Length: 209
Image: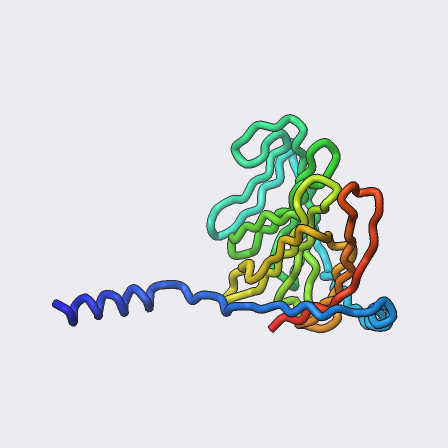
């Protein structure tokens, strides 16, 4: 009986999808001079875009092997919202995904990714890609506005995008966040005093380990 239990446990372990490796991100403070010098080496990735689909009657429909992914004006998921609107930003061939922005009251509230394989991601901001496009970060929110500050790191693991790290700072927000190398980012942090009457910035280098 004990041998049977061990066999079943091993089979379950084999059947379980592999977990993404643990990711650690190290913050290294920089002086303003060091930040300005490093910013000369920023790498901005801008994938080419095609537009194979068109919005029809307020509806964007993306076919995938897992079924259609649809975005209908006036709806957020299954909830009715007369002010919800969607814009198709196109298909990125190098990444094999479609991008759809959701608007409410004229403001972007979500960036929706639908991959060629059918995975769907709802991001709180625009993705910024590493030079090798194997990972991306999304920075959103602010201390003086709607939505708490957050930085999320997504990595491609066995064909699936997964959030592998995030930080939710409560004393600063992202002013700028840009890639230097495939595992290094440059960060400008904006700080506020308690009354939001005075602000200042600090700088850091982020190293993904």
